[in-house]
Image (cartoon, rainbow, N blue to C red; front, side, top):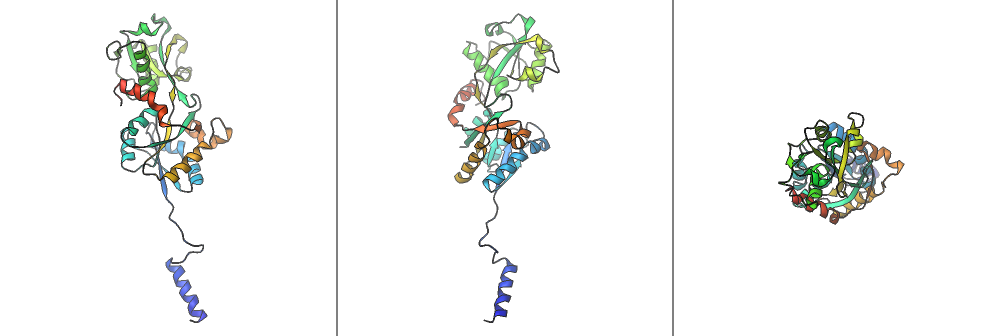
Length: 287
């Protein structure tokens, strides 16, 4: 074979893609990162794109964000293999875990609540209500049926205090937001509200919260977890876990990656840490 003919053959092989410049090439995989649709899709994309980009670089596979159309869609996407890693509130996590063997990878830390969150029960100072026992027969405003810190945590607290939560309080229609629940108490539509611990601080600029008081605190429960779908291979899941655990809570270097998502870092977590939440969820029929 002449040198000229050999060069012609090699050139043709390159053109057909049979040969590569640096050995065998592998198609870049894609990891689908999903979260709950608590905001509109553009806002969520903006919040989580820095984290997705960080994970892409750390794991070596492209991470793309997928947003379900509704809250139920999160579990449906996981079951259908359309979501590889997910970031959800703790109740949705345990609900999905009942049906799909998802693996918790890390526990998130938020700016105000850290890695644990709890709920409060709020009343007006002039209501005459000074203890949990005074709430029997009173009108309650809760956020939503599936709100951990705006319904479920408080029901467990009342149950521990001896209440039959299905008979001993009057439940108003769900407020649909923590702000609405607090406002219902302020306006005397409700006698008490169950909301997240930091809610009164958030409303100081829009409501005279000095007229309100907290008469009960729930137990602390683990915050939002990041989890892996069973269809994500173990090696990749381990890389994702290692990558997020590098983002230690309250490290200023994390701001570029986690700031838009209102997070400060991640810590290790196990599924057992959600067992108390399971008890609370079963009490109100959410599990």
